[in-house]
Length: 404
Image (cartoon, rainbow, N blue to C red):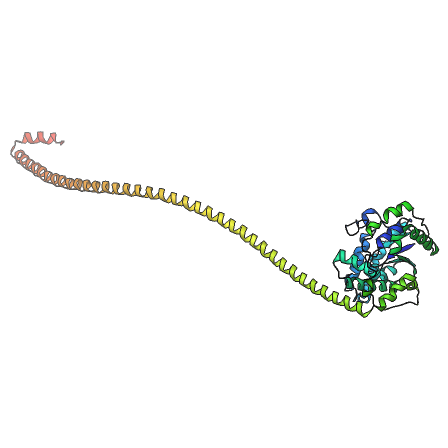
């Protein structure tokens, strides 16, 4: 058996879902449920996957949960709707082995057509709460103005009545749950059994009383102030909820012009806020990009500064090497000059030696001439002597010369 708990935000859907859960209807494993938060300390009793899918359905239809005036399932093309229904069907398939099971989410008021397409004759349990109490609770949680909260109450309530038309439905009053929780639990069990829901049991009184706590009933409205927020259409809707005639297939109503104007004004403001937020985010992104660039430039600057210091150190070392080379250069210059002086002295000495050699060569030449003259003179004198000497002496002389 498929059960859905529906109703406007802040109307007590969490309390009702837990009450049905205490009757044996499966919600899901603990890790599949949204954890409690300060605005709902007793828990949401709502599946995370259902919440995420409903959010996507609303966004795909061009709306948001708090500005549903222009919400229209017809905006979903065939392929898109089929994909969303397929995902809803996967969730239903995971729940089916645990029948009877229950799905709860206030967004179902808008998105129920998708879930209706993937379930067989589900039972819908709808909870309603007085509009000013809903508006006060939304003001506390979301900061919404009271007229907006009342307009949302009207739109959500009419949407869920239209979307669940023709199904087995029950109405539960939030005020009655808080005032007489056990009585409502017994009546709810009886009515669900009448509608053919199998596998449920009566909730234990201790469990019900421990869960339904009066201290969590904080936004209690104001009987004197509420009429100022109720136009004729809202009064008619409130009366139909109170006497149960709102579930009559013949009963119908349209969203009042006041609600439409309020919701459209809110939607326009929200769009401007969204655009401004997008612009702000763009500016922040640009700022962050510039900060990242500045950081990168700072790092590069530090690296260049370190490189500069390295170059300065290298330059200083080159300077030291230059000074060393300069000293060595001067030493070599002095050595060259000294060697140049030595060379000049050597050249002068060589010139003197050359002069002496020339003088000696001239003297040698002179001596050679004198020796030649002497030798010639001696030979001449000897020749004359030999001519004048006897023949025997000439022969002797000739033999002495090696003759025969």
